[in-house]
Length: 307
Image (spheres, rainbow, N blue to C red):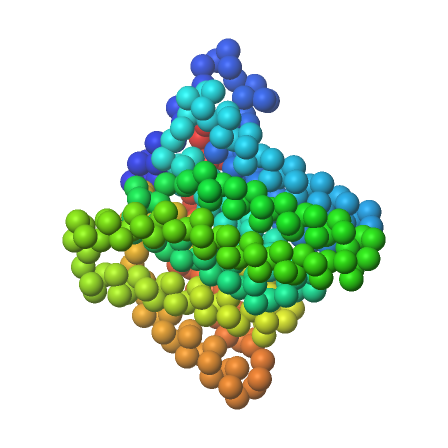
């Protein structure tokens, strides 16, 4: 096991009498399962049938409910670990990002309020990588996540009767985006106080901002990704995972490659001269898999192996 992973305070093996099928569903595994199964409810939406939509919302609601279940189990089994506290907020961010970008691609939601909402998630993930203690999840943020998940599910259900009705939810999405930023004010206040007492190297912070700029750029070019929209989803998911590793692997979470600058130039060049994005998106995917994906998959494998 790598040094970074060994510091994650993974759960200890269960006593013999507690081992079994149900015992294998530990809090961290449930959280990971929520991430891995997320593509299923999104894929169901592409069938466009009433039954598929109902199954999609039902499965998505079940996965969302596991967010409550894993917390209860962690407290009852006294398994509140560093890994668990890392996984829980990023699983919510990945959930919201993948679901909302899918709904934008399929025309359920307009792009602009969704981009505003997800920009908040990207910014908070970035700040949490630098100030993990100051960015502990607040109750207001939990309500924000609940509203985000609920709005997505209700919108899909309403579309079963008449897609024209979902225009009302477009305005609600703008309101939710505003509420999302309001829920982040406690985080911003804590970070402001932390900056006054912590010494952060400007050079390190500047390089780390490359990652923030890279992720925001990917969100901005989403409307031009076409059928390759899933690359943006995958890349942003790895971004959230990478930033969450700051508590256990700070160098991995903070150090950034200047290759990001090259990719941003490549995206700009292709968009300007061809009017579409194709090759640059595959470059983004390969870069993300190499930089973030391998590390993320390694952590996931450790979760599956250990209790």
